[in-house]
Picture 1 (cartoon, one colour):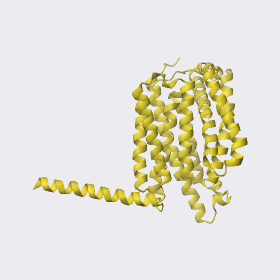
Picture 2: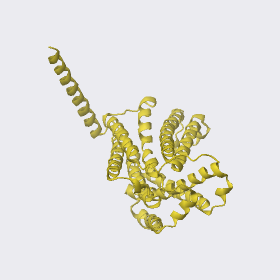
Picture 3: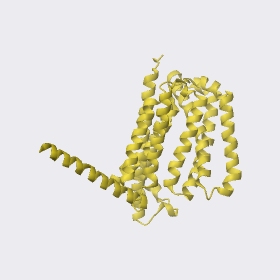
Picture 4: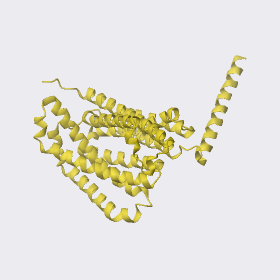
Length: 336
């Protein structure tokens, strides 16, 4: 019988997996972009419907990196609270932004650099104030909590809201407003995270006690089918949003909606906020606000040609020059 892992060890295992996931996913964007640029140089563009990238080993290497990252993120939900793992996903934007400036020659302007620092500060705040223990440790406990009235009401609300958005709102406003498709993807995505949490616990139990103990539980198969359905809806409407609207608009909006709904679902289902103090709640809110602001700076103002980015970069450089020149003058005065 394997020894039971303490909650603190579980927390740091989950945190490590979440950070590893952001690193692999961020790197995968760069590798796949390199492959697509190579093909575009030869006259074949994926945006024009070309599928030649499927024959490029560099693109497949990037896809493997993304698969490893998603697997690490998937496993992280089995060890750490969803309120910790989910916000860490925003760091993949930071990783890809930093690496793209070095390997793709893309400019990381002054607002982008400030966004990187703000993201790191926000992530640190979330880690410091996230719940260290999970209320649900086994798949059987999770099966009981899924039937709680509070979570059933939440899941019903999400499903009804998604159906109304898909059949009534999206046909009229989906082509004009990015909030419609992003809301559908983010809200349904919160249910897929809950399913990931259940499947992760099931895999963890299978490793510890044998696969038969998991295969005989109906809740495991319910989560597996629910994950497949939710992911299909989530990715469908995310792709539709990316196809119509600018990525720099969709990315921060999706992060805000997705993270908000996941935190609400986690608070209802897993009671992850029951061990937090008022200071922890404030720290989490400040940390999430910093991450969202950093992602907005990284994505909305990433092009040097935009008026805000240019003016902000000029202002930042001139301010830093004045600041350091004043300090230099003061140091010279003190030396004299």
